[in-house]
Amino acid sequence: MDRTRPLLALLTATALAVPGLTALASIAHAADADVVQNGGFESGLAGWTCSAGTTVNSPVHSGSSALQATPAGSDNAQCTQTVTVQPNAQYTLSGYVRGSYVYLGASGTGTTDVSAWTQSAPDWQKLATTFTTGPSTTKVTLYTHGWYGTGAYNADDISLVGPGGSGTTQPPAVPGGLTASSVTASSVALSWSAVSGATGYAVYRDGVKVQTASGTSATVTGLTASTAYSFQVTALNSAGESAKSAAVTVTTAAGGSGGGPGGGSAGLPAHALVGYLHASFANGSGYTRLADVPDSWDVIDLAFAEPTSATSGDVEFKRCPVTDCPNAESDADFKAAVKAKQAAGKKVLISIGGQNGQVQLTTTAARDAFVSSVSKIIDTYGLDGLDIDFEGHSLSLDTNDTDFKNPTTPVIVNLISALKTLKAKYGSSFVLTMAPETFFVQNGYQYYGTGKWGGQDPRCGAYLPVIYALRDDLTLLHVQDYNSGPIMGLDNQYHSMGGADFHIAMTDMLLTGFPVAGDPNNVFPPLRPDQVAIGMPASTNAGNGYVAPAEVTKTLDCLTKKTNCGSYTTHGTWPGLRGLMTWSINWDRYSNGEFQKTFDGYFG
Image (cartoon, rainbow, N blue to C red; front, side, top):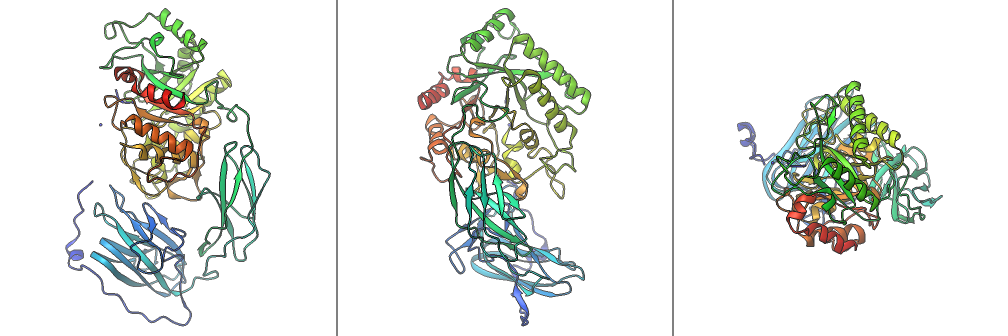
C-alpha cells in the first residue's frame, strides 16, 4: 500500500530497404499437405498460443473470422503454433496480413529460421517464405506478430504446405457424448466417448481450459456450491486440438455455510467490507482511533507491522507515537477497542509489509523468527489473524523456479511454511488475508518469473505459489486493483485502471482461474467467491486507480448479477463474492465516508 511505451524500435537498414517480400513460388507435391491447424481462425484461437489476440468477424481475408492482435508495452502480440513436420523436407509458409510492421515466420527449423514481413499493409497482403527442415527436425514453431506501439494487426489463412509429419497429420475429431454425474457442492464428474487417434483430452469450464485427461473421464474440483457451470471437452494429438464439444451445463449442489475447507468464512458476514487503519504512522488523512472506526467495517487491518531488517524475519508493530499522532489512544485503550470490535463481530488483523516493509524470509532462521514475532504481536493485542501485504521486492522467483505448484525459491517456500505454522497454531478461527498487487498475481497469466528464456522480472506472478499452497487456509484475497499498469485479462486484451472494466476483468481471473504464462497445461485454479474481495482506493488521495461510486456499483452488478457489464464478458456469475477492500479507512473518513456508503448502499 502506498504511504509511482517505448518508442518504435529502429529497424535495421537492411530491413528498411525491403518494405515487403514477394511471395515465393513453390510446387506442391502430391504428398504435400497443409499442416497448420485452424489457419483461418474459424475456430477462434484453437491451436494457437497468443500473448495478446482475439478473433474478429471483420476484416477477414476469407471465411468468417480472422486474427486481430494489438501490441502494447513490451509485448509484440505474438501468436504461435507448433506443427509436426518431416526431417530434410521443404515447406512453404504463407499467410495474409493487414497493418504496419507485421511478421510471419518459422523457428526451430533445424537449418535457417525464416520470416517475412511488411512495413505497411492497409489491405490484405500475402507474405510467404520457404525453408528446409534439418535432419532431425520433427516440429517447427510458426509465428506471427506486430511491432511495439504500432497498433492492431490482422492475420488470416496461414498455411504451411509440405510433407505431413510422421504419423498423425490432422487433429482428432470432436468428442461426443459428454455427460455429467456425481455432482457435489464443489465437484462434477465428466465422461465422454473416445475419439480415434486422440492421445489425450482437454476439459473446459465456462470456455477456459482447466485440466487435461489421458482417458475419457475427469473430475473437476474447486467449484462453488449452487452455481451453474458450462463444460466442454476437446481431443488432442500431436497435430493439435479438435474443436470444442457440445456443452453440458451443470449446477452444483447446495453447500454449508462454512465456505469450504480450512479457510472458510471465519465468522465473516456474507458480504464484508475490509479496510486498512493507519495505526503505525501519520499522513494527511489524519489519525483515527480504533474505537472510532464506523461499524460498517467488518475487517480492520492494522497498518503496518514491519521487519527490523529485510531478511531478519523479526517483525515489530510500533503504534503511531503521540508526537506524530497527538490524538492516539493509549495501549490500554487500544487493546480495549480491539476487544470491543471483536464483541461486535468484527475482525482485527495485523497487516505486515506495506510499501516500506520489505520482508524476505531467505533462511529457515528468518522463517522461525517471523512465526515467533508475529505470534507475539497477535497475542499482545489479542488479534484475530494476519494480513500479508508484501510489496516491492519481498517476493521474487529464482531463475529455475518455473512451477507455481511446486516452488523452490527460499523466500516463497519459507513464507508458505511460516503461514501454515501460524494457521495450525491458532486453529480454524484464524483469519488469513493477502493483499498482493496485480503484478504479482494476474500478470502471471502472461509472465511467470524470469520466463523460459530469461530476461523477465523475477517478481512476475510471484504470489501465485503462495496463494495456491494456502488456498485451503486463506480467508480472503483482496488484490490491489490500483497503482497498477495495464494487465491482460482472459479476453487477451489489456485492461487499465480507471473504470469498472479493470476491476471486472481482474476479479474474473481470480474466480475463473487462468493458465500461468499462457501454458494451458499449467492452470492456476479459481478461488471460491467467498475468498475474494475487490481492492480499490477510497479516494483520489489514497492511490492511483480511484473509481467513482457508480463504477463500483457497475463492478458489483456485473460480477454478482451479470448485468451492467459493459464490454467485458465474465466467465460466470458470483453472487457469493465476499465484498470490497479499500486503502484506507482513514482516507475514506477524510472523504466523508464515500466508499463505506457505497458498500452499505449496495449490500445493505
